[in-house]
Image (cartoon, rainbow, N blue to C red; front, side):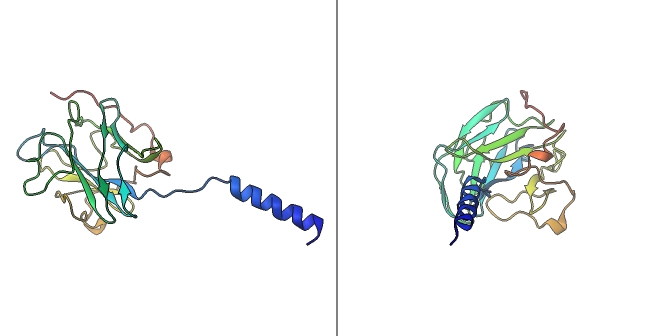
Length: 196
């Protein structure tokens, strides 16, 4: 190899090594029952989903911006779900919670921002609900906000199983989660406040 070629090669290697690595989050916020259940509006729950390899959630934090940090634990296996219930393990009958944690005064019905960070403090997912949870969910029917491959929709709750297919979508909102979604976080970002 000639000297010029060797320098070009080394320069290319240095540039390649210093380029940011694109990381795709495998654990995402998957479903949000911000309105509670038909039994009680305080029976709120949030579901995470793992589309990658098993992940130890010890030290991970789910932040309800302006309200509370929820410290996660346990391992979420490949293709599995992690259910966080606000009040007790009776929030969803016949399905055990992975974590029971108070949500402060709850998820504000006018909207909230949820931020999922790994044990290193790196943000891996963010959901900005929009005003009055415009991404999905229904306070009357208690249908939940559910993530699809490319958007969020409103559909009957599916805790612990796959969300309703996007072809059945009752809304067509752009995704607001994931590491590369910061451009979709605009004026729809709200801060949760106390719930009665």
